[in-house]
Length: 490
Image (cartoon, rainbow, N blue to C red; front, side, top):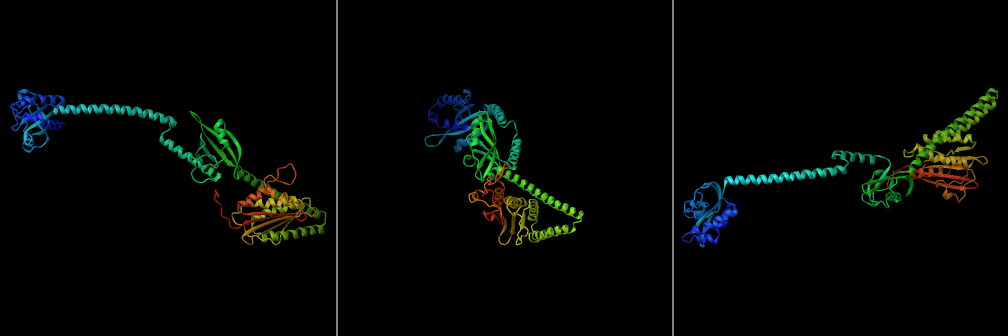
């Protein structure tokens, strides 16, 4: 600052012209003092080439030599610079500028100075001011951060950041770990969250965040809860090829209903599980029937032996042995899959108890089945077809059900035929519809063939039916030996 003031004074025409007058001090002194007072400088001294003063804060110093010995670079070399020296007023920092005439010749020097004591005082004053402003700003920032932190903690329910991160990880683990599908939408019907089971159940790939729920899921119940604010429990929704059980719960915030969370599960899967359990139970009952049948025959043999009717006992044993030998030869030598053997043994006992002739075609041949054909699926397919056939011939003369199996070629083929009264052409198209049955009765019907068809389709198989009122009905099942599980979204 001292250097800038000195430069300004050295360029002033009045100062330059004063050097040409008989008494330069008379012109320069008032002007220099005015500048000193306005700028706050300690002194503004103008001197000639000899260093004689034309101005000074103390008038008694005018006409005397300038002190400090730091004028040479300005007077001799015409340089502008800042120096530190001890003058008549004490140690000071000075700005030195040469005064040039119209010809560019140095004719004098301007020295503007600030006492070091004043400089230190001003620095201390400025630092204090900056410090006070900084402390004030710090207090304001601290108060603002406290208010902001309180507001954030209110929004985060008082949880620390690490607690929020932990809850987020746990929420993700729970959402994607549960088997039920979970879907959340905001008040405008845009999806805010959907877990992986929900995507698999609804055949959805990729991110659905911020997409409208309409078209991705049956959204009627969601909008109903958004408008009413009342939860909906265990509602059945048919979506594409699935029956889904839906529960909807509203979400609330300070402004009211903020969204809805829906959880849903596949009813079809539950029904399949129940049907499988039912078929296993039926298989168990068939085995008990077989045991009961043979127990009755043993009682008869025991009675004949006790009565001494040995010839009749031997004839009975031979007849049974002959039938069993034929059946067992086919069952254990030609059908080599233990699962199919177990199912047929149970059905043979059941047929025997009902006095129905269940024959295994002697041309049957079956190696061990591929692993993708599960025991539960075989029980549903073979068990239901044989049970239907047994029921179809229950009122026929000489009731007969025939079973044939082969694995020649690329498919495994099961065929069940009966000599019942057949199925009308009108009923055949509806035969595999769930709940449809041509039989009368109070018991729920129409599920066996539907379950069998679902189990066949599950492994990319095919089921055919041919029926004739005169010759009976034939069901044929084709199951591929090679099977590649389809993706969930296929």
